[in-house]
Image (tube, rainbow, N blue to C red; front, side, top):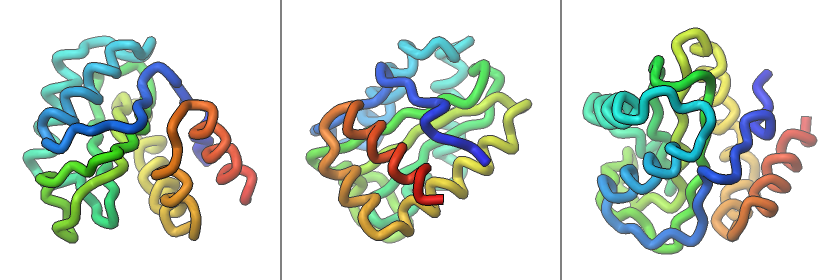
Length: 155
């Protein structure tokens, strides 16, 4: 099973964000991906993330969005955690509510099983009673790593 801390890249996470527009927020997060050692083709990654978003919203509800793509623009699974102080109001989430947490990820087609495992793991994490609340209070990578580590140790 996938371990999120194995893919932890502090330089691509963001906290206390105040971007209230979906497109601006996604572009901001994508620009953080430029700092990842896993990006092979940034422009292709950007196109693939936005193309996926056109197919169907990745705002899954309850304040969470999971923009993602399976693309050869990355070497391997790359994950970015982003916590918003002010919500993204126009995300078009399933429940119509604003988004406070955006977990953006991309995986290479050879890692498709990791991609699917990640979606399942994030779903389980958000079913855990205090996971979302802890994420919303998170203000730095050390706190984020501890939250992820605590969840991994629940098994």
